[in-house]
Image (tube, rainbow, N blue to C red; front, side, top):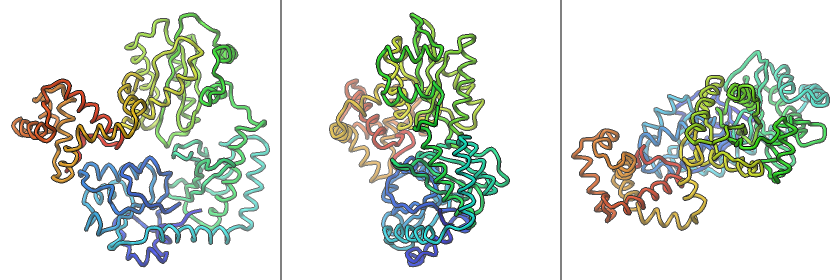
Length: 513
């Protein structure tokens, strides 16, 4: 149960703030929650439908590209509106934020004076409580009877969402807590981006968000409440005796959970799936991330089809869901030549991208020869995917060795030690860029990425060669290093990597501005 942005702006704390609406139709924007944060990399932490309150402290010193990227992250996450307090960090809304909000059609609010964010969150919560107390009635009762009948008959999640769609007269989808579409209805007389969003909760916590993609009405609000309970029951059946997931999904779930760890157990399960042991054949394990709008059930079907095409008569592929990702295990050749494995995955990813809308990211481990190593390999593939996302990869193929250094600085080194190391190595550049809005950090990163080629670095940065020489000289003076010294370059490269993994920022986008 949510509210329109217009209703949110009518709350006492928002009225007292003299809120200015710079972008967006407040009658159409649907709000699920009000949240405050100063974190720059906030997009990945949101579930959609939020009004995000910020003073802009996390945006201080960012480049125009960074500010636009910040808005893009929020829009990608499905945020309802960005509300910026003026007076602490900015005296006016930065033009890059305003332009990006217009481009992405993201509602943008401004508070002319400092405001109590906590009170705004409390006001919104009280609004939801009042609505829940006042809700209920015939529409909810009739809907509950129809929906529970679908659950009792065991017709599945998609059939349940289809029934919700019939009752609501609009498209319906279920998203997991990370914003990934789990399933959507096949029928819809109406389908809009705006609509009613209701949390789905189970015994152990949030299961996701149910979205009715139609204009908000009292009947849809009541239906969404009861439908969320029915969906929770249906999803909960996945761990109950009445639910029988496919054997491939069961094995993937057990591998992820660490339930099946011994070589004998894995071999037994693989044999039952039609994978008798074959001496010398290695196993390629990958985690696949698709666009958040793609239902995971569709992603599984497409992935199975793609890898079956590749096997040619040896349809040995295991596909299942783990969280918001698809896990793939398939047989490789007898000699796991790294270049060949990468080429095969690239080809499979391209075919998968042809079948599914949006981006496709494939993260794979070093092939394993022993089935007893499969559980560990599944865990590593998921870690490779998380690492790749952390440093900005959204599509393509990433192999385990591609992120070896990234894993080293994030896993093998104590965070406090790494922070101190980054500060020692490049801290003066970060401070200089913040204070003077320069681009020395970007210049250093580009110079190392271009293998010390001044011509390529100047072209990449779009500056004259003499300007590059001046920047490199300034970098050496500030840091007290020689960029001709290999040991110095090694330390700087590791520090840049550590800084990027910690902040989520790409130095080549620029830091100052």
